[in-house]
Image (cartoon, rainbow, N blue to C red):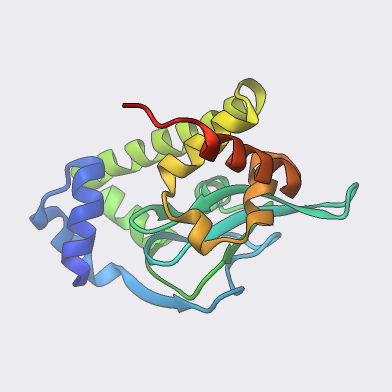
Length: 199
């Protein structure tokens, strides 16, 4: 898929941007390949780019000094935005790592170039507002999920968002995201697999 088609697919659905709106931005979007286990952004580094995942899957994680564990917070995969949003909008050092779990390709636009679009095109200003609302909803939804939902419900939500994740990501990363141990994840998967299918 060419750059214009991909942007039209993702941004058109997201913010109603037309082909003309997106064509204005085309020279500002760059391509980047990220090797497996390399980083889109690192802790303590300012996130300067907003990306769209063309191919691959990423995890957002932090290192917990108290437990000496890496704790996964989000996954990003195809046709999703990839960014440390708070770091990006404030241009403040990122609190997390964003790591590619397989070889990945992204399209990205820099903070300065995106703000140039905001300042010169009303439709892109609307995109910026919708982007902020999207990431607010995304982050608050994650907090509420951890507070209010069972582990099994979190597991089912994850499969809805990333249907092929078990074929692509090691189970201990998924268990970390769900806030459980690997053995508990195995029990959840077994329990769901043994349930009779609905007619």
